[in-house]
Length: 168
Image 1 (cartoon, rainbow, N blue to C red):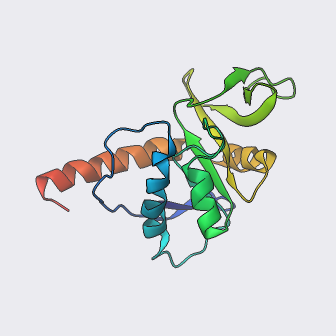
Image 2: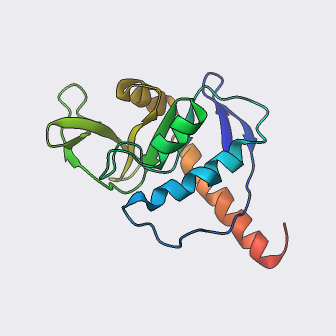
């Protein structure tokens, strides 16, 4: 978990916890509802109440238009943005207002955005989890230093490797 102050552009806290996985593979179904308890457990000891959570799961970019970010957001009644590195659902279309950020549609319904990852042709796919508009989610996400995600991923991998070696 990483707590980031977007105004000061600084990491406030970073921590990791282990848990026994419920499923080892993700299936695009209602099984994602089992992930909500994991996120609720992660935030129960936070002494800072964030204005918004950004979690690595789908929000409305989901075959049911209701991913784990939506369920988590309903449980905590705090704005939640879901992001993934793989487009789970929808179709990319060019954005006339901002050609650098494609939109994700289901038929004619805008359900998310594809934020370009720095120095690559890949994207972060964002969608609403709960309690905010898609435009607000885009504004918040584009204010982030996207290098945080790579940093967090590296730190997590190091944590896992150390845990396996019994260092933690």
